[in-house]
Image 1 (cartoon, each protein chain N blue to C red):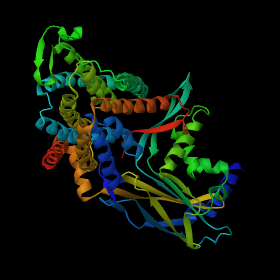
Image 2: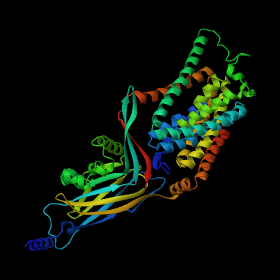
Image 3: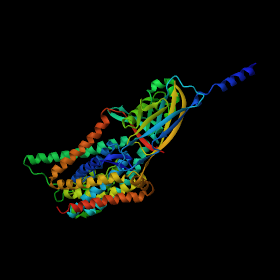
Image 4: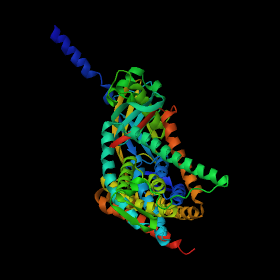
Length: 309
Length: 256
């Protein structure tokens, strides 16, 4: 069954889009990430103009993240206070990111900046997580006990900076300065790369701030809902590239996928969860790295800068 | 004496009928407007044409040839080429095509090579290759532009947007022909020009241009207008749909 997309100006198969929404929604719900870095390339592969793909998939992220965040809120696995601080930093970072995006485009090297940032971010974050979870597996296998994630009084020095705040749900008592600084960076990278930044947020909350896994997913989803809402409306106003038909199809597929993903995520053991996320990130990083080093079949590419009627 | 000679030449020129005026073309499209609804998956438009000869013209020994060229809305297209830099493959060179048609099809009654000679073809802009390699299609860089022109053609024809059909025009009688213009679903909405060229023995006898347009209708049109004229409301609507669906799903799935 085919349906014509009014903004993308092309027909697509309804079932295919629903399926893609469900698949990405599942992964999104499972790991507490937006899934934009998976959906955008898929949509572009289908022939949807990149601007429409980037703008429209943010609607799906809003929907599936809303579902996960509300679910987490009911299970008391969402730290609203921590989330609010992450959002405030993230919005400022996004503004800076959008500005840098335009600057890199003027310089004509946007593609390169994006691919290199993807490769670096994904491989660094992915291999850090991979090392950690492999070590955990190894220790368990030998019958030893894994060192507790955090012992009393065992704090990284940056958590002890001034302006300390208590986040009871996250079992965190730390300075807000590194948290805001970090959320600035995530917002910046997110806007620059056209992604929500959940895949940086989740590991960072886990490893840098040592927040419990259950709370990490809910809080990250909450932060994603708020920043992506802003991005969605800005895309609609500035680029008029949001396709409401495509968005609705992706959303319907995505919310169901996200439900099952979130359920599967709750039954996963924490170290397996981190291991799978590490594999996902490494795979994406590797894919972009290959794109950079393998001789392309078709060295030429075309971009349509504007339509003249 | 010289004045007399000039006079004779002028009189003789007046007597010989101008070949370009001898035949004229009458064409008609099956639709002047293609409506795009939610179930649109591409279509085709039929073109009918008749060749009219005025009474003084004698019938020709060689048969007529017809070339139909259809051009979609113009786009600003940039073609980039990846080249190795150390171990990496990066976009290095680029070529701009400021007024390339988004859709371009050439339908002919015979292979273009048989209709007219190579040199004439470039000048007359008959055939897809001569349009793509025309001097004014992109800035000339003394040969360096050629692979980019070829790449544009290759990539566009892969999407079904640039095509040439050697037998796309069929003669029903020696002076009446028809052609079917294929429009893939990805051909964008906008104004399309249909140029019909009549040739015989490598000479262009007549050329006419007609138009049709592709427009979105009903819901598709409303959405397009809303996205452009009511961008804030449209964006907010999409956001509300997303939030509502997310909330509904969380309610549905709460019980079990």
